[in-house]
Image (cartoon, rainbow, N blue to C red; front, side):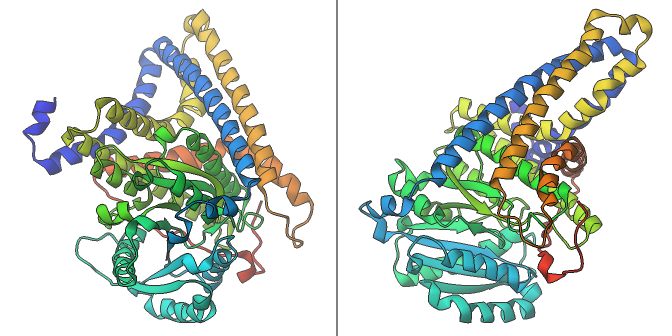
Length: 509
């Protein structure tokens, strides 16, 4: 097979890799239906094996989520700034913070900048880069001027960049914006005469509000890391900024993302960068900044470094939160549509599989075991995302519905519902644990919300199975199908809106 691939043009090979995840998903879904009709007993065997696999997987993930929570809780109790200040090179470290924005209201931008001024860290070591788009030039320049007047004297440096329209080869979106801003920031840093090795870059979504100790812990971890120039740093993404105002479905999806991240943080060998993250400027410059022609630049930047350094690059967990917005547009139905689009965009991270497979195929220096582990983790992850909820909640019951009485009386067939019941029981334990953690992590309830809203915050987890299917498997299948067919997805900016901007539009719970 590999000899055959070598004879093909490189774009053709890359295109074949893009098709693999979608093909696997559709072969599974169509195959499950066909097998249920033609050989229902065989289909029942497959379903039982799948249920048992997921029983073990859910148990495994629950254990890791609890381990991640313990580390998170311990980290929150520590005082990180004195520990960082005690290190020899503390005074040399600068933080270059990118804040890309497109049409967000100034209230969102101001909230983020206020959170940075509240950091338990010397603000004169912050280089803020507010990165706007020429497509929103008038609005951005007005907001940037107001914010620079308010905040420029509160940070060491305050840089404003404007990404031009229609640059050849770019895909309009966050990656293109921060790629442009990155090069402008590099020019600025060079004028200041700062060494790249002493600069930690943070790429934040515009609604990102880091924990006050985030930069202290980040600096401490960077200075004590045995290979600091070959690792990114991933905090815990939480979505507490507007969580009391957003609809229940949006809250479940947001919290599910946080709990998924907990399970991966304790397994750094499979961890990618996600959403807001940090990394050495030296590595960022080496790879030419974030890729400007893709949708998921936040995770791709890790793979760019991994490939560039021949596999000598990792992600180090930072067990402190960065709070962002849940999907909220002021309207329940519009929020649902926006949530689906956001999940589809996140699921479009499947585009990383082709990049990884193609470069691993060409690389002779990355060990085979390392290649296999990353390929397996990526492929199994996107495959399960798209197929597991559909198989568990829909197709898992299909062969029993179509089987005749003789098959239904078979001992193996009789065991299928039992396996599914055990899976649901373990999943329910996970839901209860998630509901408890969600309640613990909530910010204080605003006075405008009745106390009964706290009860809703717990009961909302009963909707989780529906969210797995509607806002998990379906958008994931959508994204993988588009990539398989070559119907490439453009970058969609999640609408940012706070309830206070439109007081009369309380969401439906």
